[in-house]
Image 1 (cartoon, rainbow, N blue to C red):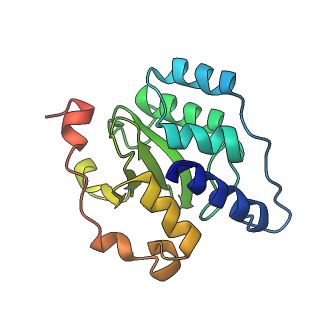
Image 2: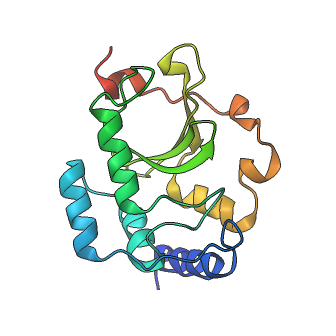
Length: 177
């Protein structure tokens, strides 16, 4: 068993016993075909771990806060934002897929173009778009471990994004440099 297989098993075990709110139920996993259709619509592939979460754990509904979005909701959100669907008019970075809504329009997103699948925090209340993006975790693996172990910033300090490093690739990834 690989480390990723073990991580997926650990996430599945926690997801089955720790749903984000009372009355929630774990969704059925997405099919490999659904992931392929989502990737075709997005124009990029999902990181293997993210695809594994959707196909081996559930199609969203587990994880921190209200849980991961169902895959099609993530795709729809990304496509709307990339096509100018941002209320503030800011450009949305290429390959950055929204996965969790923290409330107040704050999102956790996976950088699908990053080899480690960094998890970014989008905080849209910033004065300028390049100051709205933080590195929440350098990899999806670390972010998931933070959820599993109860060490993620959301467990410790809801204001910790102030201590997070700004994501340096906003202008390059939006073509606004």
